[in-house]
Amino acid sequence: MASPAFIATKQQSPPYMIAFTNPAFLLHDTGQHPENMRRMQVFEDIARFDPDYDALTLTALIHEQTYIRDVREASAYVSSYLDSDTVVGPGSMQAALAGVNAAILAAEKEDFAILRPPGHHAYPNRASGFCIFNNIAIATAYHRTQGKRIMIIDFDGHYGDGTSHIFYEDEQVLFLSFHQFPAFPGNGKVDEIGYAQGKGYTINVPLPPYSGDDVFLHAFKAYLPLVEQFQPDMIGLSAGFDAHTSDPLLQLELTFGTFHMIGSLIRDQNLPTFAVLEGGYNIETLPKCVQCFLAGYNGEPLPFTEPSTTSNRKCWEAYELDLHIGIGLLSPYWKF
Image 1 (tube, rainbow, N blue to C red):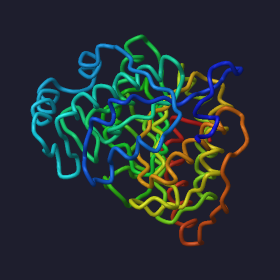
Image 2 (cartoon, rainbow, N blue to C red):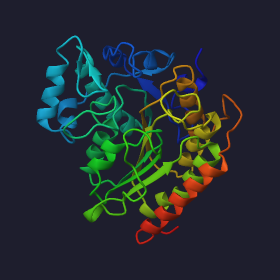
Image 3 (tube, one colour):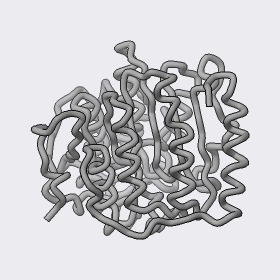
């Protein structure tokens, strides 16, 4: 039986975020790939919605028509690869468009879309890192056309390079990313701060391998005051959980308590907020991580506990060096 966080309704006082999914995400059959349909099957007793937006038009807010056509054509085969990491099959196009619609619904309802394939590595003209369409970027672009300022906080353990690229010159979107470095995709360094009008509006917080709860929360609290300075109309979360200590694809060491704290700290900003699922590849801990985040955001107790982790001296030294460099580079744009 799932945690009450998964089966709650909006009867509680706001802010209150619920998780929802769509059976269409199971149509994206990747076989034994790390990003597989079991990532959805572990979410039981969760709300299911099939929003009926014009997903193709929405996708075109970010992605080139030739690329959308390429995805459709590749999805006609039993198994095909859009890049070396991103596999598609007959149901992949439908699942990817359902993910776009789910991201839009999450933004509208201020909820958490449990979706796949993930999106934050996808570029306007190509797939990357398991991602086909960039769900968070599309939802952001949709609200951007309505004149809204959006802050994207990406706490997936991998750098959201596609999202960063898309908004790298946009001063109406503040992109803040916490991620392991070095790791895939290889960029996301502290000196990548945006370009032209967007200079200062991309903020990268690279974390050394084996960073624990202490380093991550120090970083999160150091940069979270930028929310008040930027004054966004809404916050979009690229909510990945591959930074958990049990995840097989990275070497970060976050625990359930940190994801609960992330939710609580975001709640304290008192802004319209939505989330879309990105990574998280240990199917035993993934739903627990999501429940812990939701509990934190909804002002509820931590539903699962495990010993917190601490970082060694070498890790702290590397992190603090990047922190000081980053603050120095960003000081013309923000107060720290």
